[in-house]
Image: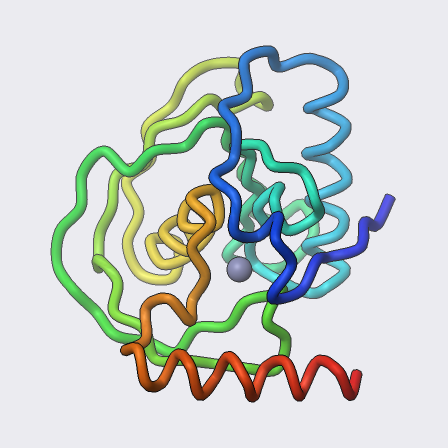
Length: 167
Ligand SMILES: [Zn+2]
């Protein structure tokens, strides 16, 4: 099922997402629907707050193509990071806007994988490292515009609202 994606400045996007304590049928179904929603968008990552569920759950696929490289992670955390790289980045909740954002070039992410049914650690670099940082930001209520300086952020805040009103 394709779920509606919340857009800026929806308050759920600003909440700190709750830890998932019980990985049951509902969470698995939610992850499945989130993956379908991500592929449909199309996008390479989606966090549960973006579809209105304030839970620590993300789906990622750097290929953006169904069943190519889907990863589902519950309660993900960055446990190690190094390097720095600046690249253009977008967000399904802020459609049509792209910003150059500095991120770690390499991260190690730990979380529960409901497909493998165990806690895993993933070493990521390149695009995958960027997606992990972007999606884990969502779980903290952080959006890409928060990585801009104050003046730029205020300018884009107004531009985004104006743009989304026209949609
Ligand atoms: Zn996003």
